[in-house]
Image 1 (cartoon, one colour):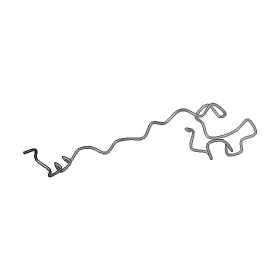
Image 2 (cartoon, rainbow, N blue to C red):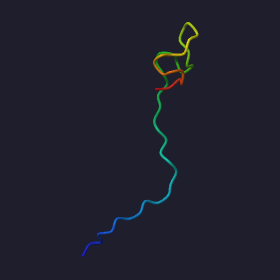
Image 3 (cartoon, rainbow, N blue to C red):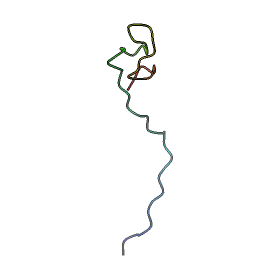
Image 4 (cartoon, rainbow, N blue to C red):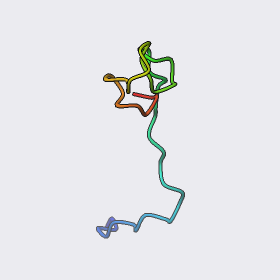
Length: 46
């Protein structure tokens, strides 16, 4: 008879989301006019 109880997940480090450098501002967060990049909202990554 197979075990029907599900194993509890072990505690581990949280998975970090993948981030890519913004191709519009180059990761700086500002556009060529010095304003906040509209593509990444100034974060520098997408």
